[in-house]
Length: 92
Image 1 (tube, rainbow, N blue to C red):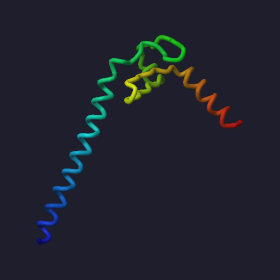
Image 2 (cartoon, rainbow, N blue to C red):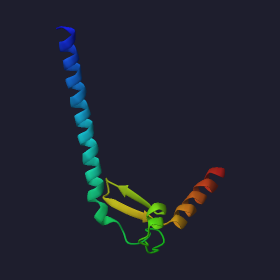
Image 3 (cartoon, rainbow, N blue to C red):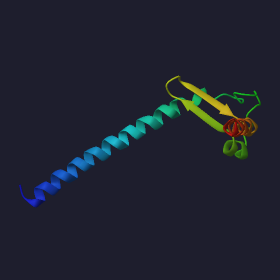
Image 4 (cartoon, rainbow, N blue to C red):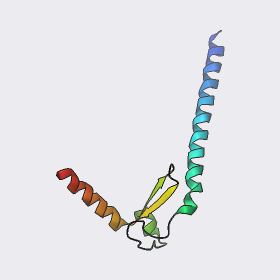
């Protein structure tokens, strides 16, 4: 085996590895997009309706659990409550 042949084999192995990685990432994204239809219309904690504004899309949080096939939506107020609870729990 000469240098050119070794380089060619190394390049082919890297290309195969990169292709497999890209395919796995694509499958992960497609699964998450497939669960998008399960998105609730209101906050999962306080039942506040989700407004269809750009600000709401930027501030509300979506939590996806693939194992349980669950999608939850949380408003900024509920996010703040959880953050305060966690901070107070750490202080004790």
